[in-house]
Amino acid sequence: MGRKSYDVDLAVIGGGTAGLVGAQTAAGLGARVMLVEERRTGGDCLYTGCVPSKALLAAGSAAAAARRALRYGVDVEAVTVDFARVMQHVRAAITHIEPVDSPEALEAAGVSVMLGRAHVLPEGGVRVDGRTISARHVLIAVGSDPAVPAVPGMGDVHVLTNENLWDFEVLPRELVILGGGPVGCELAQAFARLGSSVTIVHRGARVLPREDPDASAILATALENDGVRILLEDSAATVTADGSGGGRVTTTSGRDLPFTHLLAAAGRTPRSAGFGLEEAGVVLDDAGSIVTDRHLRTSVPGIWAAGDVTAHPKYTHTAGVHASIAAGNAILGPLRTVSGVEPPRVTFTDPRDRRRRPSDWARRDRADGVPHSPGPRRDGAAHGGVHAARLRPAGKDRRGHDRRAACGGVPRRGVPRRPAEVVRHRRGRSDPPVPDAQRRRVECGDRPDAEGARPARAGGGRTIGPAPAGA
Ligand SMILES: Cc1cc2nc3c(=O)[nH]c(=O)nc-3n(C[C@H](O)[C@H](O)[C@H](O)COP(=O)(O)OP(=O)(O)OC[C@H]3O[C@@H](n4cnc5c(N)ncnc54)[C@H](O)[C@@H]3O)c2cc1C
Image 1 (tube, rainbow, N blue to C red):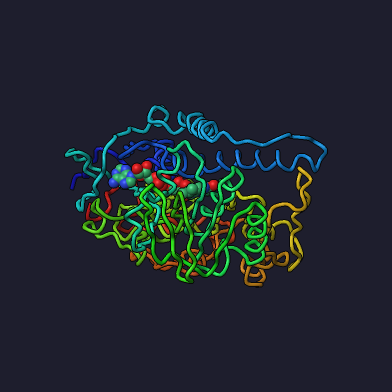
Image 2 (image 1 turned 45 degrees about the vertical axis):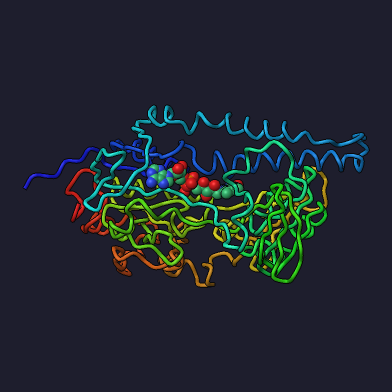
């Protein structure tokens, strides 16, 4: 029986971090790759996320440093902020990086680029503006949207999100931010330092709820020192427009908060609807995230997913690393897993909340339970970032088990952890159990035999070889 031929080896849907990295990884392996982007390559990180928010924070930091300068004997007479120029600086940061993520750069790396909205086809491949592209594998990298809470009256005001925040030229006078996660905290501090009166309304008992309580407390104090008002265990009950673009938020605890600008920073919604995923049989979790196994396979053979559209942490470097794994697995076979791949993460407030996984620290043979000192900051301020690395004794894994025992006395270095510890959400149907003997070989750093590393099953990600079953 002849092999089915395909237009491309890998069709990548989405040109954000995950799509860019996934496409370039596959092209670098010699695959024929088509990337489809409906708006502009670069995605959230470049245009509406990391880059503009960090550029805004840098402007806020400069204002804060100027205000603090007298402490060091430097007299800065009056600090004034020209917000229109701040926004010019933000846009210049984007423009500076834009060429790196451009279609031209992708094409130079061997990736074909198509602009348009892609639909996943149940029979395999994608359709873009009426054109069908057959693909041996598809990588879904469509990202996420800002979640806007459904509050009565919200529809009567112009709600800002990270997507439409970067267009205006006038500093918000009274800014109410719904949400005290990383995005809410970063933007609160930036705007407060630039001169806005900022209130965070946060449902939880502390800001940065996913981080350690000590980190939340330190950051809350820092934000308050910058003038941010933080309302905890409270949320917007109603929003009333005042007819001039602003309005008031009434909170569930009865507070009345006038605003000129209202910003929703209340989490992310995966963009998993409306382009054929469900029709193709791709399983989503309750939040709408694509369910993947540890190789980043979805429930459908030949369809892979990475980035914000999955249930993994929504960070740009996570998107990039995972996309590289998914694309490599699609092209070469499922050799790499997300086990042990937990990149460090940072909330770029001042002080920053920096996280490293325990494995980084265990390798340095630190003693258990001794907190890593944040150390002095270069600018002489009282403390450095909030380090929350959990430590463990040398030679022990994070559960306190002897790392040598499983490997016949040879310490494991940088080995993947067991899949169940990493993939906390539902495992994909196509992820078969890993036999213990094989797992031990992989964990001890031996090269598994080819059969074990690439189980012969549907969706096994072979570029050269038979097509996935059902494709
Ligand atoms: C304010 C803010 C600040 C952030 N700061 C940081 C930070 O400092 N560090 C960090 O690590 N992370 C940060 N993040 C998170 C980071 O931006 C995201 O995790 C990352 O950009 C996700 O990349 P992605 O490729 O999954 O999705 P995206 O970048 O959203 O890319 C998805 C792309 O898919 C396209 N698309 C969608 N559907 C289709 C379709 N059907 N057909 C074709 N194209 C489609 C979209 O147009 C989009 O370009 C921040 C996020 C925000 C909101």
